[in-house]
Length: 201
Image 1 (cartoon, helix red, strand yellow):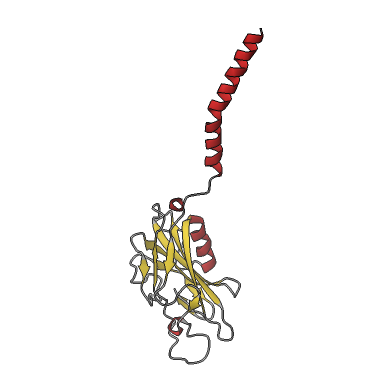
Image 2 (spheres, rainbow, N blue to C red):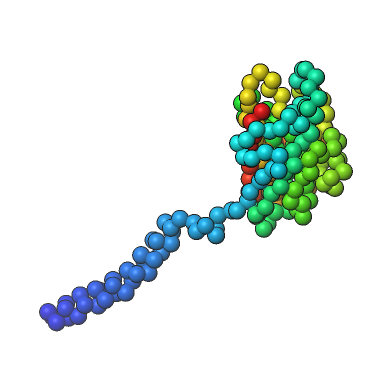
C-alpha cells in the first residue's frame, strides 16, 4: 500500500512538472505586450508644417475678417503611409480642438491607392483630385464644399487632421447634403485605423 502511494505521488509530480511549462507559456502569451511589428505604423504628415508646428497663413481662412493677402484658405498638402492592409478607402477629418472640436473639413471616398493630397484641393463636392473623392459642405463662417482653414484671429488654436483607413470603398449613405457631424460619425464607424497630425494657428 505504501509503495502504491509513492508511485502515485511520483506520477502526480511528474505530470505537474511536465505541464507547468505549457501553462506558463500560455499565461505568458496571454499577458505579453504586442510586439512592435504588431503595432500599426500608420502615420500622417504634411510638407507645410511639422506636427505641433505653425500652420502657414496660406492655409488660413479668408472669411475671418481682415484682408491679409497671405490668407488663401488652401488646404495643406498631406501624406500618409503604413495604413492597415485591409483598408479599402480613406477619409480625412479636420477639427479645431480649441473650439468645441468644430469640424473644418471632411473629405472621404479617397481611393485606397491614394497616399497623399496636394495643396489646395478644389472647393467642390467632387474635387478633381483625388478622382472619386467627395467633400462635405461646410456651414459656418463660410459656406463652401471642402476645406475651411483656421479661423481664430484673436487666439492660437490647435487644429487636428486625422486620416482614417476605412473598411469600405464608398460611404454610399452620405451625399452632397450630409452634415459634417453625420459624415464624421459615419467615418468613425467604418474606420479600422487612423493617424493624425496637428498644427497651431
